[in-house]
Length: 110
Image (cartoon, rainbow, N blue to C red; front, side, top):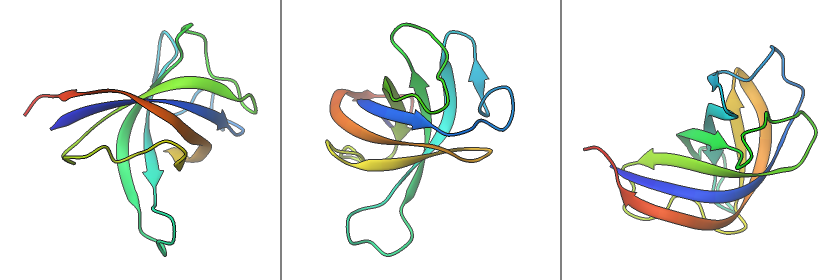
């Protein structure tokens, strides 16, 4: 398993409950990132994702926010790249984002 971290610009839509699924204190959100490659019909990949704000504040619906996205997967190469768009899933579709750059790659627990 490898850990990948990316900087991204995200926007959350209307949040149905008090917070997206998996919200913990300190501005951390455990959600799923859904990606697809350009020209790919349907499919795509879902990755468990931790979304954090550097300032620890809560994510606000409708506000574009720069965040760090951490995901752990079995991929040898980074599953996301600069300029790639992705959807954020919790209790359904809760937002969208675009990757600006990769900031970390490392080995995670095996």
